[in-house]
Picture (spheres, rainbow, N blue to C red):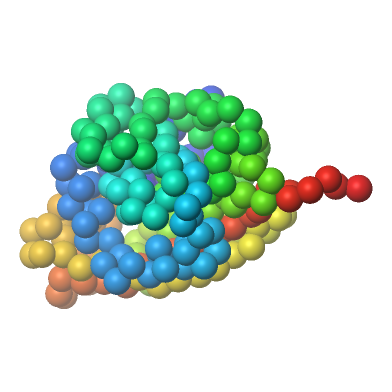
Length: 244
């Protein structure tokens, strides 16, 4: 997640994600530390089961989650706007015949209509008001009855959410949730555990997620190697038949 992604003024096209774009090696450390108990994937399996289905992962970054989807899916497409990350994702999945990685954005998915069963977007693009074009595009590529699952950080859950709000004083979690509710999404909250190998890894990850001042505060307030982080899973299904 980028601390710049909640800007009130959106430029057309992909929003840069400074954390993974500028520090992909540290972001890889973050990915390995996130949700070590697999709570998010357990919840996704209940609300957007991808077993035997065709999946697109929007904003797949370096492709960290693609092998996890590929283990059960019929096919997986990763979509990513940043060329170096496209190359990294392709390298990661080079041995997986069911997985491909395409350059594209949430607003312009390089897929035909009704092409997939599950659209997954995790801390990639969807952050409430302003993401309407991405939602419409996801609905376009979903087959009838398909599911869009938007996974984002829950800023109401301390301590991570407290640090987020310190850096983003204009970000209102209630506004984001109201937006998704008005768009017909169901909401599921989950709490996860992040666990790092050492304090240096923890510090480096906090350093790419927060301003210097907040990162130092977060490091001081995390005495060990783990912390609790809340997520929201917003889920919306594509219509399964004619609307009368």
